[in-house]
Image (cartoon, rainbow, N blue to C red; front, side, top):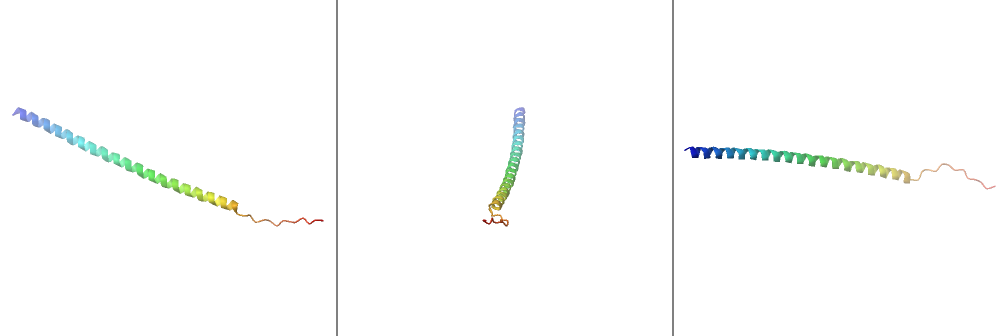
Length: 83
């Protein structure tokens, strides 16, 4: 009877260790997935900000080149009359 009691105790201890390891793996996996999700969200947010900044910069550059490309009104010039 002592043999079966010892075997049962070892089996239960091994079972509990397996349960603990499984729980730890699940917790580590969920933490890893949460961190990965946070990285993806942050990357997407930064990409959106970068694209918006690039668009604003391009618009400002287009306005600057359009403004300088337009003909400026000429002031009234005085003609030199030949003598």
